[in-house]
Image 1 (cartoon, one colour):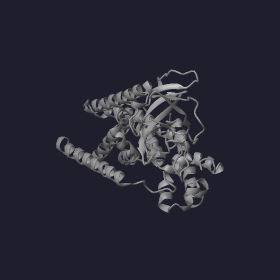
Image 2 (cartoon, chains in turn yellow, cyan):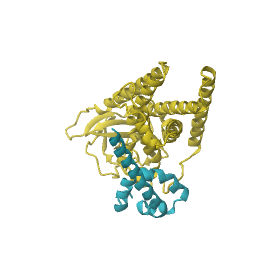
Image 3 (cartoon, chains in turn blue, green):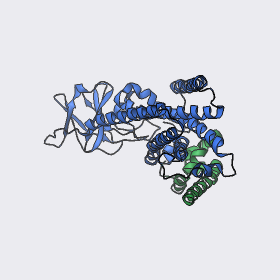
Image 4 (cartoon, rainbow over the protein chains, first blue to last red):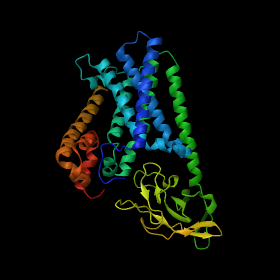
Length: 343
Length: 71
């Protein structure tokens, strides 16, 4: 949340994570170069740089894709999620160095435009074993550029959250292109199955994590509570909700988070206005519901961000009957104040 | 296939060419018209946003003609 745009949104924690990212990247590059010099000493410097940064980018992309589902499965991963934007931009820079060096090394020696050369130096598009895999890498890099260059709150606001999110969901197309780029490149240039094995393992891990997280969420979407005569939905016993935390339910096809705090209960729409983060997976901080993704805050009784911020989410009426919570499935206008029920 | 490649790369070059022009307009004139918060923004921030403006200029061009939708 902010009233002006900063160059980079740094705080003490983000700086610490960025140092870890930079340290990890440098350590990987050093390790890669040392191992290459030991086991493949005839490798020239350009090839080493291309491979080191390419493999680094692939590893970082796997980490980035794993963070989302891991955070849904275990809240302890949430702090890493807060820093995913910086990790993504760092990954793009690694991929860019890989791409630029590859183009300089392989496509600048002739009199053809280097980018045109990437697409036409091998025209065997009909072959699987000799497919011009460089094209796939170029297209993936283009997508990563669109994502990295728009990783700023200015674009989130001015492209609209829907367009921004759609743009950043292209990471899965980039991932598919990169997998094919590595597979086909490895097939054509190496006989070792090591590279292919690692990529297959990474794909299995990423796919499994997404499937398990989706299964967990499907339980929430499959919730069908009993309705009383007034049409209110029976949701749960109030003791099932931990203090300063929430439980999420699907009510009238919308996800609703019921929060317990200071001996009170309030319900709001589960989707944060910033990037659609799951508010019910966050907690109460300084009296405000705090989104686990980027820290956007809302007052529990009216779903409004504290002044001077203007974000608002829908609120819901609750009722307590013998410790059982009932909810009116008809949501109220965004930002409507609802008296919390005492528990 | 070469024709398809030429057409694709020409469209790509045109897209980014127009994006560069729009980006320059954004840097010096358009930033505050697109988003009122940008009026007091530092040059470093505009420079940081430049590549993204080049990449997403059609959306921001629409935004320029509907200035109040995201405020």
